[in-house]
Image (tube, rainbow, N blue to C red; front, side, top):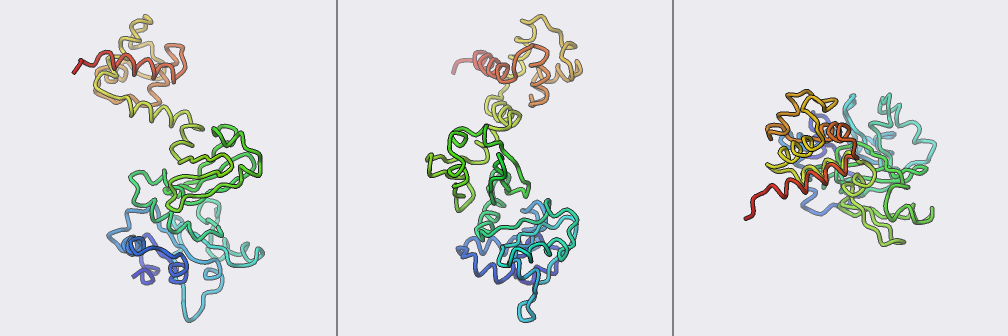
Length: 283
């Protein structure tokens, strides 16, 4: 079934050679078959073709690799060719922006991690591949997006020497990165919280959001002597809906409140969480 998916509109095609060489357990082979079927197509964010680089460059008559070409297709090429031959891949695949749709790696484990990420509740929290580039840790997440994290902002990793920073391992299921030198385990969620304040604020809001969040915001605003029309970036109606609990507080809205109150976003969120907790009736 997997081989037949190559010529269809299905979301996943894995070359038979790679499928054999990846050493997937039976349950992941069945998952690969499901993702190659029309019923499983929606599980991946885009069509994916995975094969050894040599199969893209020199299809063998006895094991032909038919693959789709198109603006949305993402290609995973497992390197098994000389460096010079790699330069031909974008041309062969007719890619104009290969940095967005062609991923090259020597690690066939990306296939397993991609499959596992496809069944996560939030695929972006799955690590498909990772590498260091200058002072950045670059991660290809399960949603097929690459995200960069400054090493200087990653707790524990920043304290390691350069050789130790580069010596990390990827969990076989893509749940975390492991640095043996510092005995550090970091998942995508932890990396985002360390390097992306907006993501951290969103996590904090979801964790502490309840029916009293809006009331807590209203109390804090009124104590500062601000009216609902005094929140820059939000209309009076938007402020009223948030404070009445009709609209959920989001990071962008919280930033507007923090700006109006003249306090950092994290300080506002902590105030709201404490006040909302105090407003909740005792059980």
